[in-house]
Length: 400
Image 1: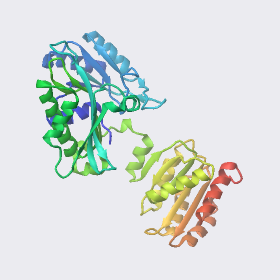
Image 2 (image 1 turned 180 degrees about the vertical axis):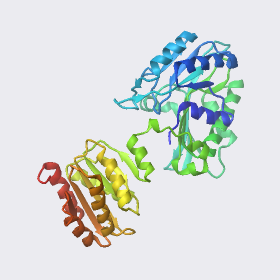
Image 3 (image 1 turned 180 degrees about the horizontal axis):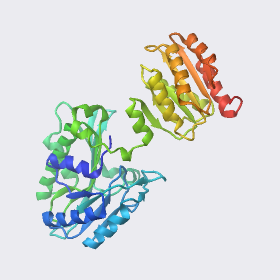
């Protein structure tokens, strides 16, 4: 589960990680009040107005601006709040900005120069270990750094049995070329950051940039945090950070019905019980000349209610020209699924796309008979090859 920058920073601060202080605002008036409060608390004269969406590249898209006075704070907030922000991570459709983070200016003059670094923590599935990935090239897209200067990316693998060791945190600071107070600050920063990552059961922490200020403080200027959905039952407070405005509405609706749904860009909707079978079904759709419009796993206990919910979600995608239901009757009987399909079809009504139902397993033949005798615009199949052929016929217009 992705969360906003300001929420990620609140988590980091709780674990002793120094951050760029900021206050979230949903209106220009709130932004001005936030700026006044920040000036009182931190002494900052300038303020950074940062759009809060679940995507990177906000600065390049015009979602991060520097305000040098309160008038500019209000003016820039009016520009950003409500704008459709397009970045390389949002796609061409962009995302609507509902709130901004009014943050302190941390690029102030001092006895030494400021430096930006990149730090992220994530799971390396190949080794089964957490890894701290870091670079001296902070403030840049890490993909560009990896492509053009891969020698500037370092990795520190953490043995899960013993956790992060002191020498590893010092190694990170050493590779950044730090010394003195900045070195000590970075060691503390890395140690606290790793503890926050582990304690919150996160999938990824990405801090870009990590800033060494002109007076040798180390702080997080940005924070991209991805929490593990499967561990949220242990963190009720973190589960409350979810912002459904940032998610696909169909995926949100599917979650409410305990369906695993991911929207894709194809023209054939699919409904399957089991993730492995879903992947195979999408392959079949591709081989038959179509493109999968979604991944939808209704789980092992598919019934009329879940089938109907799946139907409604798939049909809300205007690109869907056909639906393939592929059910293996192990835990659930195929005749029960067939009755569920017929019942859902009648309840929804006005379904103008052809539906192919492939049932295999317990009572598969009985299920096919129920489908064939329903009198509805539904085509049954038993073999996977037969289902693929019917999908092909539907797409090509042989059957409609």
